[in-house]
Image 1 (tube, rainbow, N blue to C red):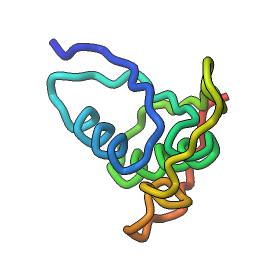
Image 2 (cartoon, rainbow, N blue to C red):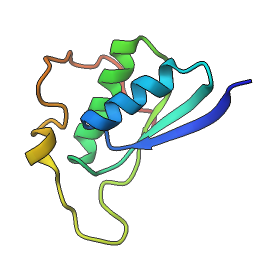
Image 3 (spheres, rainbow, N blue to C red):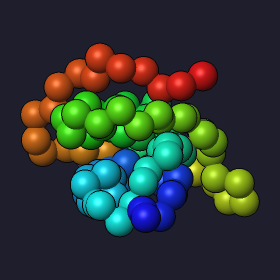
Image 4 (cartoon, helix red, strand yellow):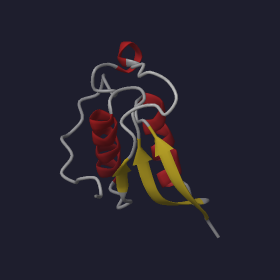
Amino acid sequence: MPRKIILDCDPGHDDAIAMMLALASEELEVLGITTVFGNVGLERTTRNALVVREVLGKRVPIYAGSDRPLVRERISAEAVHGVSGLEGPHLPTPTGQAEP
């Protein structure tokens, strides 16, 4: 029986791979994905999660979470992950949206 999880992430390159692995695993049942500010702003991390989900053809709900850290100032990793958070490959514009 697969382990049920909720994946909380800030999709840049590393978390996009984590999403792919979790969604492809027969040992996990991803109940939902939440996105937060991290590598880049919340709007971009949420968009990145939507793109990864769409490219994989999965139907897991995505929810936008906190747009800032809870205990420190915002520090962006655009120098590593690029402005979009997933710089490099040409990615489609997602057709789906995050859940309310």
